[in-house]
Image (cartoon, rainbow, N blue to C red):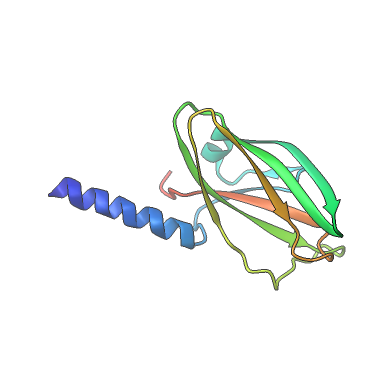
Length: 132
């Protein structure tokens, strides 16, 4: 009975994690520099092969996320877009995308700016398990 209750609780927590902004520390990168707020996640997740391009008048960013561990890694990410003055495009709703990478696996993600005003970006990556 306790095991079933525990497993049901874990399932509910994983569903809630997809919809809620992380309350813990996140790591941020703009492709040039990285701010580490979660050292455990930083050690486990590598961001590489970052490419900025323009397509149809919109900024497009592509990068590879790689799990450095041999065990699965669950995390979530979002992107914020900024205009030429460095102001965040506040009309863009922030959505956290849940991810799970198998051990040593990688995934390429592509982010398209919401408008031509966006000239820079910041990727935020947070743990889906805030108790780390």
